[in-house]
Image (cartoon, each protein chain N blue to C red):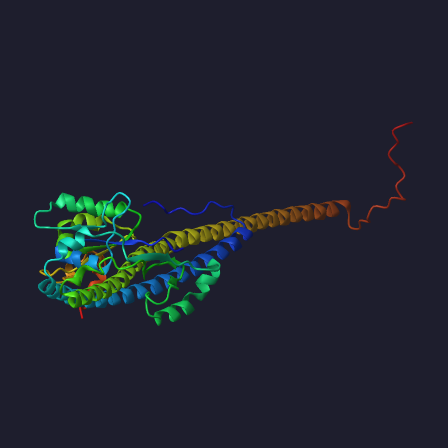
Length: 119
Length: 280
């Protein structure tokens, strides 16, 4: 049963957000609320967590992209999210390259990990 | 746990046949479920491997995109603020499809192994929306474009080429990320499904089947005991009958001896004195 088009939300530093907005994922909904959050050095963790939770609650968001170093800050909130939609994807940022051992999705399959090797 | 009980049922031959049939059914069910769980785990591992591959690929794509962003910034100046302010409508959206399995449950199970073979060779997700897998609905994301490019005029002053390259890079990154998201969601769903199926397999194996077996042994013992009772009763009756017969024979022999050497059987015609009738 196909749903109405769902948005891709972004929680990241300025460069990540700019890039994705240029890619065309940004939107302001009816209440002028954006589907992205630019995280700077002085953004508080509570604010990030609030935005994340609000994105989860919104029914028109299908995917949430989040920089890995930000995901580390709100790790507990991400781990608590068990549903399959919206999908939470961790992406690397310019300073922090991708680290698979920190990814919350992959950690769930910890048991299978010993058999897999990172190629 | 004192779950060592059996199903309360009146022990009879029919009950025994019924229990046997139920045991057979439970065993078949368990093996089918085990097959399903195995198929699901295989698929799960496949998806996991694909996810790791895609994630590493994505890391590279993102690095490239970030690099082109730096280039564009160098050429066009800092456009981040303008970009962020000019957000209006999203061009790229995703659709979440949930694919269902058609057909009856029995057919699904029977076709499981065949389906499994078919889908092990099919490339996951982004092309085929037929992501059904032995009764489990897997969500799939497909991305689509809508509306015009709201940043068409951004690089007009300078750095236009870098900017358009940047946009293309990020669009490619978005596509890859959508595919990754599909993989991830099906990963999570499969994880749940595997847990549930394994739980059911264990339940059947450790609770249902032993219970039925216990009931079966109980019925058999009851029936045997009843038979033994019957047998014993029969034997006792036979003994009693034999004793009775022996006693009567002895008595007859005694009476015969008392009557004299030759004893004729009684002749009704010879008897004179009949008993008087009641009315005189």
